[in-house]
View (spheres, rainbow, N blue to C red):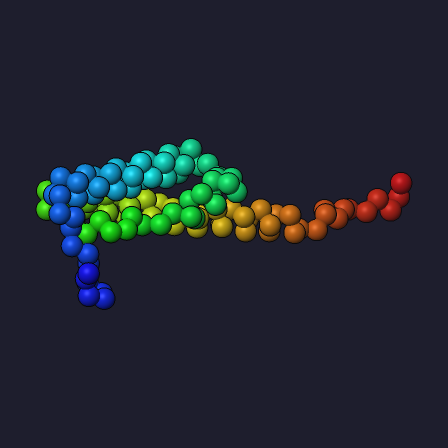
Amino acid sequence: MSAPGLRPAPPADEATWQHRWEEALASFEIDLVAAEELLRVAHLPGVAEVAELSSWHPPADLGPLPAPLLARAQAVLERQIEVAGLIAQAAASSRRQMATTRALRARPEAVPVYLDAQG
């Protein structure tokens, strides 16, 4: 048993430990590809998709990252940071577009400028 605040020790079988980490990194990579694709096609996810994504929980009991996977994990982290920035930019752009749309809708109907007093 590990002390509170300490990471759990890797499993006794080193091959299993590394395989579990490889699966976790592969899962992160799949999620990144999906997020990048959503940004590329400007897709607005549905309620079910948002619910599924919001139910994500980090993998548990993996232990420390195996040294041979460090470069891959760093590359995944860099992509996650990049995609997070792109998502923030897309959200800001969407908010600006919504504000513009609201402003256009809020204008009063056109009032005639000239009055034909003779006819």
